Length: 607
Ligand code: M6R
Image (cartoon, rainbow, N blue to C red; front, side, top):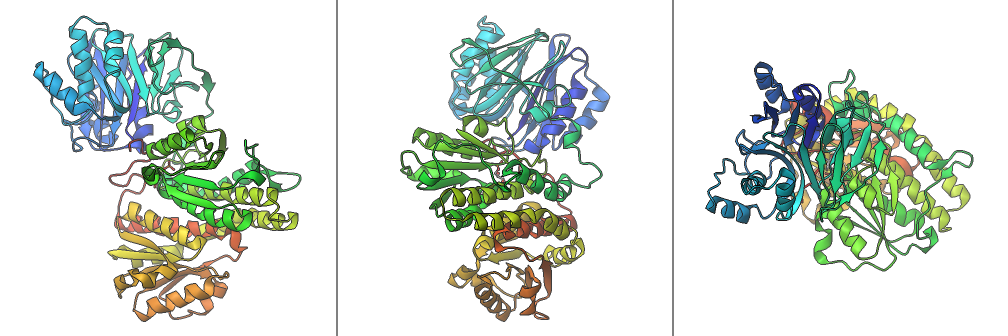
């Protein structure tokens, strides 16, 4: 979390710093700030809240410096306020930081004993003071920074500028991503390539432990042991336009509407056009030899994993365990030699997932990374990468990235089932054909806005909402509840329909809407009984089902959304869509910030 940017330019850098920060705002939006060098002196400008506030403040100041750094913050240490906003600085150095300096308290104590005066509650400020301390002892900026870096524990991406050095930015990476962008007699750095897209397409990623020295004409990367090292320079195909909102009110709306197209892209990427069978890169372990699969992820990506568990166990007969990344390591799970671990992450940078990946790697697992950002840390640490091809997702709530994950996982289940001789060719084809019907069915559901808005009206006054379903619909119910919580701030929980009677049904009364996902599949009868139990306790039921499923409840539930009837295999992909639409429209009615909900960030790079 937190976005950082640095530019050594040929003209005043402030407009570019602000533009890049806007593109990083998805990483956090508690405060923003920049520091530039004006006639060799560090000038800082910071504001609480979104970048817009900083932009307004800078209109009158109009800094002219040709070198500068910028930051957009997701608060960890210290409340969101101007005094805690980055950059943190002394007279000699200014720093922006993404991550956490875990030993900041002892460093701060040591520096205060030496007379350093701190002005914020952040962990970051120790970086500025420790580097200054070494500068005070006559070290060069490079020597001072390298020495300080060795004293920090924790995860960070850093950028620093120095008084009197207008052709220098230093930066470092440990645990948090950082990319250098190469220009024509200009140099850039940022938390991701997306931020730099309007400035350059030439990107060089720092690797774990690297630090680097940038000037207008060149850059040098050093390892953690201070040895110069070459890292590859890559062309990115990201453009400024790709991450625009178009004419849509929100990124989330745009991204929801893109889903039918994304589904087509994923199908094209994971199928063989002549046989119409799933096609995957070669895995170090043959599909027929996979004994067990461990799936590990966070948030929405975790729910994609839960859905896949049903698919892979049923259609490929591989035992699957799905773990929340932030909990995975704590039981020190024994992992079989030669086992497969699949890490699902939109950003590919989630700190919890990365830490779990490292654990699995140390246990000799084959690492498969399913990511939406091919240059991400998870991709770079994986033995096999499965790209989700959703395109940049900017809205904090995951939508198209989720359904893209589901589509890859559905193809993967068929692939495994076929290669393990569980599915016949005919069965595989039938399942795959059902996936090919998804884009059109999704487009149809997305056009059912009017019914969804009625549902949103019913939810917008509620304090608590319950989602329930069975089988894969349980996994999608969990995702529905997460979407509603994060966007509308209404308390919502997802339950396995059969689990209600074991406790949660005590919550039910006429004020608690219950959203039921009940396609008329083999589980419908049992879910319908659970709906009766809820109706008997006077809860307003919102039924999401197909025409067949609606019949039993005609006139007995206040609201119902009619869904297309397709093969049960592909229904999670379809039922995910009303989950997003309901949350989106409820949030809109409540007037919450749809693209940047409070307290959240798109890329969660702290544990
Ligand atoms: O980038 P990742 O997929 O690893 O992110 C995981 C979660 O942080 C993410 O899915 C989060 O739950 C979303 N805000 C949900 O909409």
